[in-house]
Length: 115
Image (tube, rainbow, N blue to C red; front, side, top):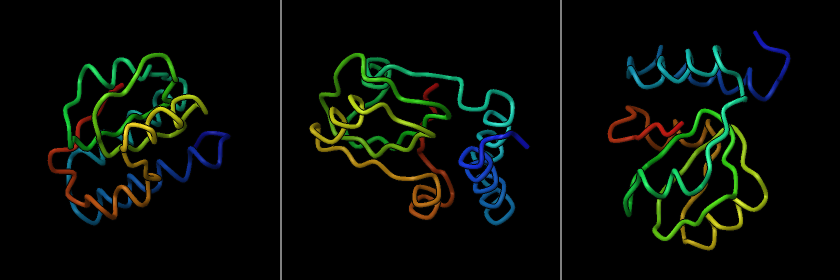
């Protein structure tokens, strides 16, 4: 395990979700987080380019505030910058914790990984 308790909890949540549902997305995210930790940063502009209205998105890293979000999505990330959080909320999008996101979408169907 890594030295970050929040990251360890996210990894544990992905591992538990995979054991419970056998949905491959949770195993993939567990492995990604174990390998990269929270080092991966994704600008809001990239998320906006690769998503459409209503998409469910998970970012296995930090969302940075560069760019804009002009459509509503449901999003989960390990971490969000203050400016990214503000822009996401202003777009009408929803932000969930890893645990809540997994509870809401247990099979991971139609969830996009952006990272």
